[in-house]
Image (tube, rainbow, N blue to C red; front, side, top):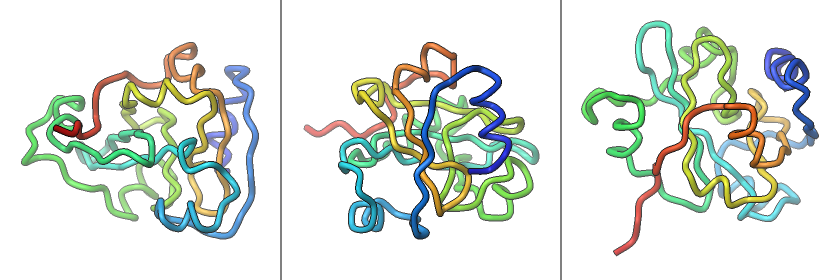
Length: 156
């Protein structure tokens, strides 16, 4: 876990647990290599919003992202929504690609899919690919971590 995330959680008294593991970057790797139920995994997609801001969209890993909804949540046009690259992540929020956490560190704007609240426990990134953060999903709303929106594709 990067120190900034640890400090963010500790300063707010948010209970959490960190799990160390081999590097993972994708949902498929996480399902295969990690001991967590796949339905508890939350992915964080990172987008470059400006020269000094990264948008982080958090969804259940089992859901497909709807990029139109994500761009609307960030208040930008769909054509302006571009993935953040590894350098953006490192320079702006101090995180590595594949380990992005849905935590509003300086330079990060966080939006959380409403379905994340249905999970009792969330397993998500810690800023690095070799550990995962376990927290109660309720902390996102209780501690005002990000805004909530519908970010996933809806079937039908």
